[in-house]
Length: 139
Image (cartoon, rainbow, N blue to C red; front, side, top):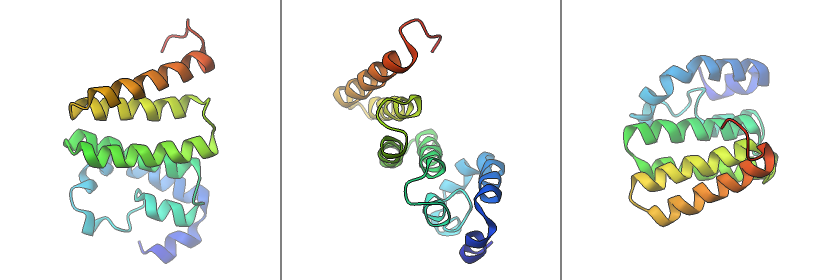
């Protein structure tokens, strides 16, 4: 499917295509030249939706998860940071998904032995979750 076709499909249809493509994301990460225009590519999501849209942030987060599972922690961090920037702009600093982004960054930093950065991100996630969910929440 070409990029120009995706631009004409509409946001809802594209969103459902991304959901269907989710199981393939981890496999697609391995070969960037072949997945440049796949529906899970955040650059395509940015152009079809908006520069700063929750679905774009979710795509960056999913890509970060795939890189994390692959053991490429630097790429995971890059994508988790992009998801965080968008989530802070779109959802605000006091949102559970913003906390999730900090949490994901904490794991990625910890996996590459950057423990001080991991702790900083885990603490930020905890502060947000306490404010948003309260101390007695099941998470």
